[in-house]
Length: 143
Image (tube, rainbow, N blue to C red):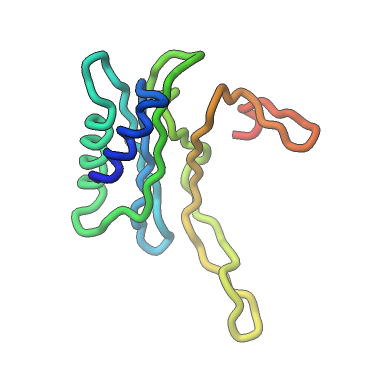
């Protein structure tokens, strides 16, 4: 966690109104699962301290015996919207669901396994639509 706090201190130069980190924790037989920690900065607080404290609590609640698999985070300066937890990154794009994957080739045939899939995103700027090829879709259509 000290490294994550230091990374947040560096990125706070770019924006320090809110921060969020998704922590991917071991999830048993179906793989890792993500847990978001998001905070809003106040006038007299330090965003890196807030997110480090929240992350420490999140990791402690998730598991006493294992370390997180992966962290992904983002600090934000709300240029065109209010500073709210709903606007705080990372956004959860899809809810967790267990899906089958082709994961190898054994005994002259493909093999598969089942894993939990969930997506989190961070982005720069407003994200109201998504363009694929020549079609533009409203956010609600692709989420």
